[in-house]
Image (cartoon, rainbow, N blue to C red):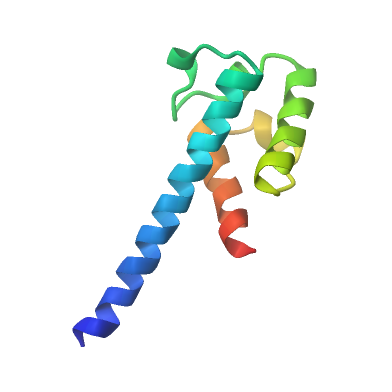
Length: 96
């Protein structure tokens, strides 16, 4: 019985780890590629405030696809927080 109970916990740990990895990758893109100050890159920061113009939004969509292999819509980048966006991208990474 304990063996069966451990499997969901392991899967949850992998999912959380993957989510954190995606959040880290997107944060690094914001800081390194888009030169967003590191202190502004917070989980609760709205993506529309981190990517201040439409060209940045398009470039981020391309960068996420190149880096993580996940296609994202520009509207997704405008409509959520960094954490929400990372969660959506992470879900697609684990679904593959």
